[in-house]
Image 1: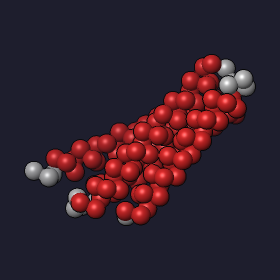
Image 2 (image 1 turned 60 degrees about the vertical axis):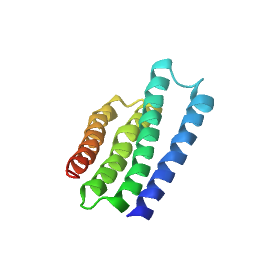
Image 3 (image 1 turned 45 degrees about the vertical axis):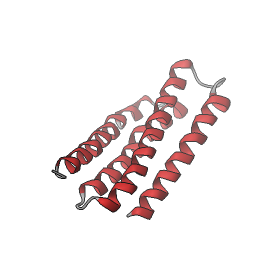
Amino acid sequence: MLRSFLMLAAFFGFTGVALGAFAAHGLKSRLSAEYLAIFHTGVTYQLVHALAILGVAVLAVHLPGRLVGWAGGLFALGIVLFSGSLYALTLSGLGKLGIITPIGGVCFLAGWLCLGIAAWRLG
């Protein structure tokens, strides 16, 4: 589990930085200010949760049970659904893609809840 979560954190961190740079330099003149802000929201949540997955990798080695693993999986799924839908929405202009975004947000919340419960169980 350590290797998998470290690789996910590295992948999402790398692509988050790349997408942020792409937005700042390549999309600035092509997207409206509103769509640029939406794109940046996706990048921010991706980078924050890439760090959360990195934390999960370290915690998974030390905490028993499945909750930490579930948290990491939910964070990864949240990035794909939340950030991915925001990227797709801004680049395609299809507003209907926004319906996926809240599902990703719920994944983020559930991941944090799993971490909280794991911490609670430590006693």
